Image 1 (cartoon, rainbow, N blue to C red):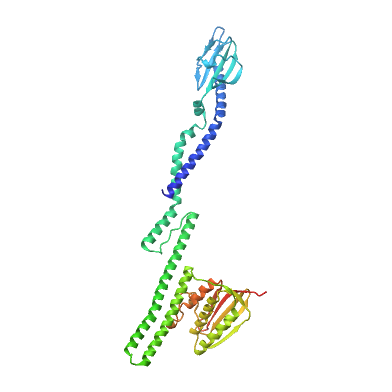
Image 2 (image 1 turned 90 degrees about the horizontal axis):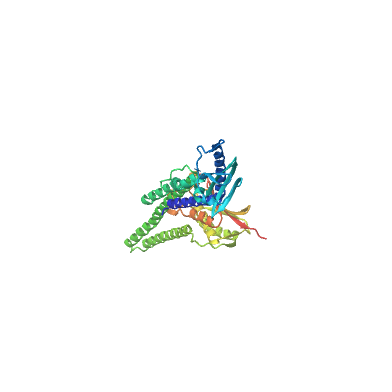
Length: 440
């Protein structure tokens, strides 16, 4: 059974339940209401009968007096108790005259009897209260008779309301089906008139937007990864073929093998980076946080990277504040810092300068890597941490474009923050900030 039908069914059952409660409450007080109505009817009939009778010196005239009027019997007795008018009522035969109105229980039935003494005779009006009388004398009779119609109208109205309310959900289902059938993530739900419908459509559209962006980035990532892997593979194949063609020349073969080793190292680094990113995306990457001196770690990294920078004709300087302790994964932090310095080396100008520093700023330990290289435009800064994005496309062969993406992911995993300040031709400043632990 569909959800709409279930809601309509429960709505109808609830309506029936409420109506049953109302009717039970009515019948609980119906005897009292009916008795009050009957006493009023009996008294009114008695008064009308008294007005209809008239007599002269010789006889009593009954005029248009009725024996039975709307459930009330009318009888006229002589002063000595002989019936002069009306039907004989066996149940009341033994009931004598008593001025006024009274309620009598006779043979399990309830009677309302009212007597009025006139000159030489008395008038009696009487009515027996029965279930049938209670039912038809009730002011709720129209409601009782209309109850089935009310249930039907309630069910139809409930179905209409539910169907209208579920329209955004049906649009969502149809849109999802279209997307599933055609893989078209550009489709969007139309805006609903209701607040809940708008919230539903906006949430679903936002989800579609994120999925669309995610799939596009995934496709771009796969394409770039394939291209990055194809290049070293092509070089390795070419060098292998060349080495085979000059197998008699030891120097040429050695040169080819060195080129193969270089490309193999590059491809190994790329595959390792891809594996780390994949693990991070899946949430399976292991983070081993501990307290350690980032001052000592950065000093060691600076000493190692200084040699690499100087080998490439770059000046390298460091300014590291002592005694700064952080709680993070030291292997990840090492990788992030090396990637930032390696990025500075790759994009520095000839005979350029690289500076690395560590200092505290408020609650954070801030690692800064500055270069005086080609710089980054404002548009490129928005994508600098995207996977495989490279500012200088001409240098694509020397970098995989995953270094800064890994830095950003490492920052996220360790509760840190990475930022860039740069302008074209004026170099770049990358800062990596993470909370430090104050010594007692």
